[in-house]
Amino acid sequence: MSDTIKELRRQAMALPLEPGVYIMKDSRDTIIYIGKAKALRNRVSQYFGSDTNHTEKVRQMVSRVDHFEYIVAGSEFEALVLECSLIKQYAPKYNILLKDDKGYRYIRISPPPYSRITEVKQRAEDGARYIGPYMSSFVLRQAVDEVNRLFQLSTCKKPLKYGKSSERPCLNHHIGQCCAPCTGRVPEKEYAERVEQAVTYLTQGSTKLIALLTQRMNTAAEALDFETAAKLRDRIRALEKLGEKQKVVQSRIPRQDILALAQAGNVACFEVFRFTNGALSDREEFVLEAVDDPSAARAEFLRRYYTMRDAIPPRVVLDGAVEDGELLERFLTERASEQGARYAVKLVFPQKGQQAQLLAMCRDNAAERVARQLETGGRDVTALEELRQLLGLKETPCRIESYDISHTGGADVVGAMVVFRNGKPSRQDYRRFAIRTVQGQDDCACLREVLERRLNEYEQHRESGIGFGELPDLILFDGGQGQLDAVKPLVDSYGYGIPVFGLVKDGHHRTRAITAEGGEIAIQGRRAAFTLASSIQEEVHRFAIGYHRQKRKRVIGSTLTGIPGVGEKRAALLLRHFGSVTAVRGATVEQLTAVKGMTRPAAEAIVRFFEDEEK
Image 1 (cartoon, helix red, strand yellow):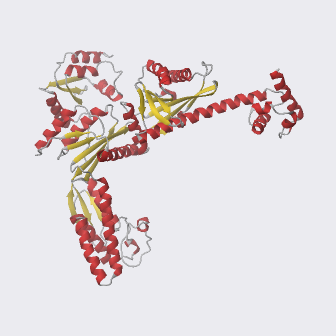
Image 2 (image 1 turned 90 degrees about the horizontal axis):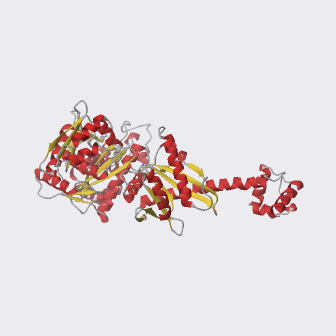
């Protein structure tokens, strides 16, 4: 421990046991972190004690602290309000900081002929027509995409002109999402009608437009203009179908926000769904560094988010535990009251029903965003997050190592290690172990040997940070409570804090549960986590069996090559023909010479060898 840290700890131990806010500063007197505490002495002194339980981010922050200040508050709630105010004012580097890119946006309808409908951030004096402003970029993009697709308007950069054209229609035309004015076969009047219908939809809604189109369809049918009537009928059906699709993302709760967290590797994402009048009215995502404590991170995110946003809803749905829940409800209620609201804000944690489904959708979107950052799959991120929650891990297990033992009746015993990185097999990290110290059939002792050798390899290669030089975030092995009791104390003795669990199979050799210290954890109800755990268990079993068979084949082959006149080639031919050494042992000289490549002297030598062995 450095002299600076010792001095900071001495100062921290002199702080009062009262609620307040602490302010960490570096050598340039720049604020790098602001936090609140129920008891200042207890909270601040934790930073300057042993760093064994600190995450890498906290270690970095502590290493930069030169001095700190504190403000005593009248209560923990006052400390929370003060913390929010100071973070908003100073934006310290190590607090969760959210980039607010909200701003007014507009829908632009370019001048005729062949107008295009696009989304823009600013109005311009360019002769175009503008609709807006809109606050939600999500709603705006959705609306522009819908009208262009629904009314088959052009979204490409090809020149649009009626008459002859050498342009070939793009894919959008072939899938019914563009009328292809670039081909020169769409009259200006017809295209202008499509644009006006799109504007009507944007400004007056689908109900008004459907009524207008229905009236025009009936008029066309009465005039026996069945072609026009059919086109209008198709347009009405498309509008009605769109309305049905939009109902999928609706809530029985009129007004609420849904918030979910997903993380993998060094990336985390908070996703927010905002519902107004029961419909999804806005969606936001915030990408940041991976968080160490999801409960504390949710609390800090809520405080930061609702200091940036107006219109706090009466209900905030969360996907997991949150630190200081009652204080947060009071804080959000007072913020909403300042905005004129007359209700109490509640934090909700649904476990089933429609609300849980909407929450799962929100989490899946957060996982997709993380996956794009990591260039992996959204399902993998979701599975890792489910597994983290299921096992009660503090961090998402990005590197998972799984172990299995394979043998035949205690002979030719081998161990195998497979590695899953961000939910996918990392085959370059797979390793095989020939068991050295264990004789006979003792899977627990074999697992201990394999894990001891693996962790000793880390001690030797930790500086490299690759291969054995990288520690796993989670260890899984094929086995139950007995294996866990044998293996976990060994892993714990190294002091790396690696979580260890077993994978239990049912009578059909399928993953049934996860073995923990307190008993078994049911896993079938978590589909993504169940699929991942099953894949890991099947993969490590396959890898172990493959190595065992390979080793056993070499041992069997060496038995035959020890016979005079039988080399590796003849041994391979005999094994391929007879299938096993036992079958070769029982063969006659005539049967052996019938094998291609065998001579009579070699066949006689084989028969004598096994006769002598029996004697």
